[in-house]
Image 1 (tube, rainbow, N blue to C red):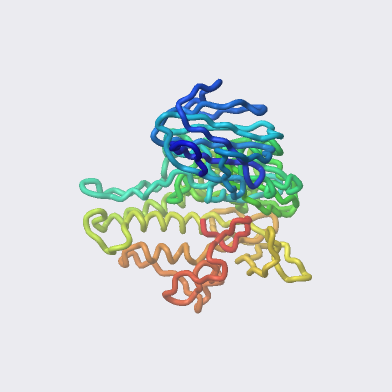
Image 2 (image 1 turned 135 degrees about the horizontal axis):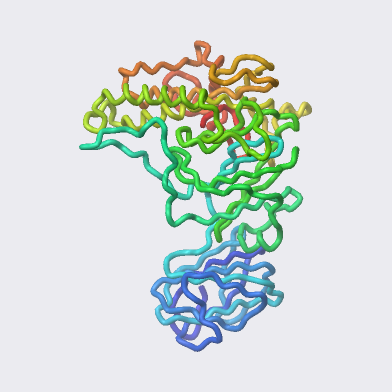
Length: 463
């Protein structure tokens, strides 16, 4: 910051513009201005404006988002270098002050003033792809509210019921907007600001549902149900509040992919993908808790009830069987495993480039491993005997072996949890070596390190 002539009171200036810099002239003094910026709110301007008054506060955050910035300079002018359209300058303004946005070619811009932190931020977390069909997609925001696993304690030693009910929606809710555009819109070349994105592109298609969803121990996310994603298009997703982050997403289901989606199951909160069930009539988006057949949900709930009853024979919440794990952790990991194996996940072989023997990944030609797929011809029995035999061909994405190993590590020994090993045919029923290496006792060092990457590639079913 450059101050000349007199001592200056400092403020925080957050800049968000499409270029690499913006010049602001700041004069910090108790003076009159044509307009005093309101505190803790967003103000929009359609053209250049005169000096703006800043309210007095021991700690101010001023955020500016612009479209077409220009150059400037001179005495009492400071410059903030930007990274992806964002920069920061912190301090206080106990006597208020003036802010002048100098831009010879200024278009519309936004300014926010806050005394409790920035009102604009670029998110480090990425959205999450649930799954897609040829014309549908389930998308999730980043986790906006973490929820710790509820641990039983004196005098209430009970665990969660098998049939979880939909939890109460947190308040206040984070307000997200989803922008979907074809790659021709080149969102990745824009600064990561809500102002720039909304003024240069519009979302294609429609959103039929946008609700908060508690995905098990992950925490609260926004869940979007999106119809009519056109085949063989690479889409880019940017969810933001007044904030923004960019998430390039490759969606490549074949036009004949037959499996419908299942989602919003309170007792299996992380399930949001395609399963080998008969298609539902239009306009149903997919199977949820109200439309899933009872002969599928009832056995699963009975298994969960029986397991919880057996686990409760241990004095959960009073005695310890591990310094790292609890009965609640055991139950949570068992639920994840049970749901993963009870809902076989439909998939199909990746589109491999024969010239390079690689799977296409957005922005990369690096060779990557093939997913753990098991071909399922029409009429073959499902992994879950309560599923009907599918009348179409599909490939089943095997569960990650780690979903079973997590149960083994988290649960008391007397439950007798046993998982197959990589040396003894585990690959026949699980995806092996993706997250963990597959070596006995070794955690991590798998070939991908994750069940699903940021581009939508899924190696094994880790939900």
